[in-house]
Image (cartoon, rainbow, N blue to C red; front, side):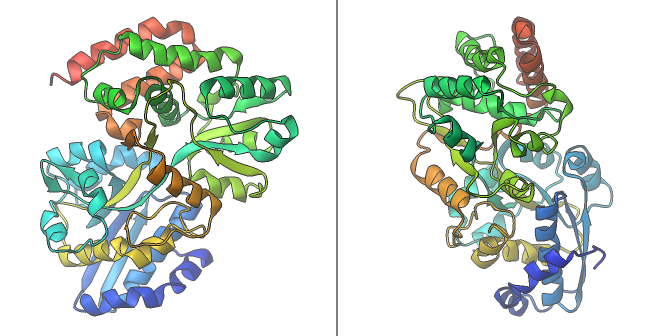
Length: 422
């Protein structure tokens, strides 16, 4: 194996070696080299990916697993070239609309037959997220809730309660500002974090169905309902709710503002919990709440992005790739890698277990019981790639220069007319 393993990765792999041995019996004739390229570059996910590769390598004595880990942001621009020239066998990517360019270009392998053969028992509920043109193009291994992670100790200090309505959110924010802090940290350098704010304010203002219709190009960006979303968002901007110069920070670089108590909350995915804990915050200082209601009576939609593995259309070791996907999809492996010592997220396999972690339990309860509006994949996954890129640039600009809204919406509308007509 070419990848260098950390002690944490080796320990993580060792804890589940026995659980994985069943797969060795089922695929005992695997040989050659299995080449995997992964974008799990942050420390926690990297340890998980390295443990998966090490364990699978150990299970198959005649197989060499060749793992390459690339920067997560860089992979978004590198994946097409990687799949086109001397492609690896297996790659990481994302579900739903984000698969479309690589399916249309013939770069992802159609694995419908593997789904039909029963390779992925327990994944039936998410098969749709892996489907384009009635065919399946990969498998999911994790998903995670988004929501507002906040400093519970600061809320207690200020006598604040978790808001359930937009009015309460605004009132809490004002109290936080009055205490000399900012309400929210955020880093919009890579744009997608601003997409999360648009997702939630739009879903809460106009509903999940409207949000998805906008994503399908069926609604004009200059529509009054879209303007209402931005009007709600501007309430926070005009208050000074966000940290200064957020456009210069990545999401990780914005974490210290919350860790140090200069900002009180972060609208983010559950993957941030590991980083907040590593930064020194205890679970007594942290808590989570569902994004509050804006328009009364609308069923609440939630962002729950699903991360995936795919087999390259040009894969050389298809048998090993198939076996690796079945291994990653198994309930035992999904339980382990999504636990607090792994990704700190939710397993997709219905037969997996949710570990006793307060944030995972809260996320599971929210997504299973209080997301009647629907589950979105996230702005840059639900919207066509070019539309998402142009829109998120507009969101970042709006957060810095809100008076530019008319120009921003006109640009987005022109882009909508062009992109969806192609």
